[in-house]
Length: 373
Image (tube, rainbow, N blue to C red):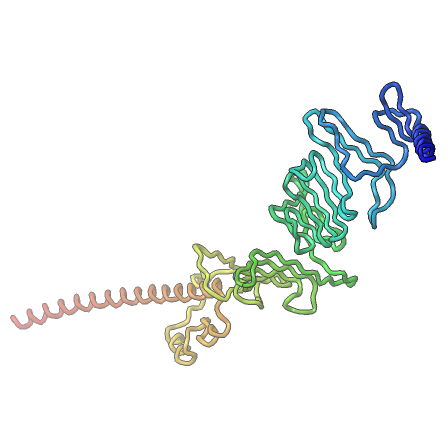
């Protein structure tokens, strides 16, 4: 009875196998198909607990076709190819591993790959790279270029170039409140008001000590006067210069009242001042030169020359270089006229002295003659 049962099981197995496996004369084996087109052609699912490797020969390939479904929240790709070329490099390797991470690469995976992309939905990280170098990373919504751990919305390790166009004949773009123009970096708020309190800071230097940082702050509209449409430059963590809303520039001061306010010393090789007039009017015939008596009286009453600011005025308001130079020149020219007039008077006195001496000699001669008689 036992022999009969074993014979029945063997026969049933052979019949079942014959209905599923269809070898052909060309040595192709079909499982679930009567017309296999490759060495092994399977119509149905395959369960494997070991990797399916490509042949070590060149120009071999593997096609995984019509894959669908989900692993967790990840949708599988419908068709994937792997191909080993004549130099034994694998091209386009796409994998879903651990049910979490997905990566696609060219050349050999897990080694120094040619070009690759990897996505980790669990930690919300995507990366792109070439060989062993990571070019781009998206980590928790932060984008890193040259950085695998960006700490801001955009972290760049390396240089950054903004292409404003293809030629060097571009005109300066107009200030546009809506869209960005070429070559523009803008900091703005989500405000829908006419005033936009956008803020943009460009800084260099890190660490916990602020005095290692240099920076440029650009401020849009703000109800805070210190932040209202100005540009601030700083070094050593401190403000050094600003351009305010009116176009006034302050160096060493945060409240410039003139086109250039400097709280400190200016050293220059040359300073040019545009003037609307000059003091040569002193030499014109119609100019009324004050008498020395008038000058003396003004000094006695006011304590300074006429048309020259007093010490109190200078300490309070400072001086206008161009205006002061003109006033000083006026006094120099007036002094020159005084000296010319004095010289004329001296020459007249000199001539009179000569005449007096001559007359005295004549008189002495007459006295001598009279005495001789």
